[in-house]
Length: 126
Image (cartoon, rainbow, N blue to C red; front, top):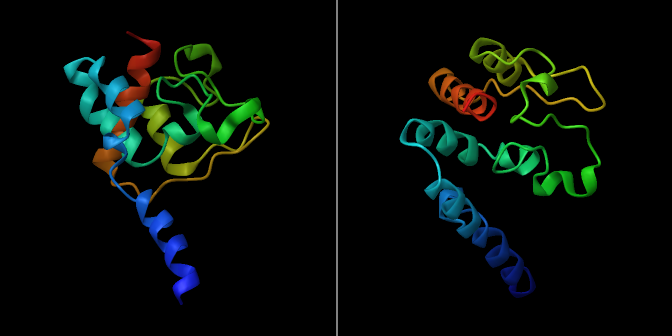
């Protein structure tokens, strides 16, 4: 049991609010007021893990660009459409086409999915 204790401490160290991570907090400071709710939901649901803080598709889980993840700053790269409704649909039902697929995130409440979609849409339409 004693040998497992350090592992438990490490696991709990990464269970905090993502908005408190220094890189996330710094990026958040530069956002417009109308982007904050969407970004907060984006960060708390770890969208930035794959898509990156700025939506460029280079999140830490895509190190070395292993996956073909769209750059949200360019609406032409969206696979299922770039309007808010299409983005919400992609979040809710996932993305199957392309080199990689994104799983469905139906566990995210509808109002949070809408805010995330609005935030993503704002990246391509500043």
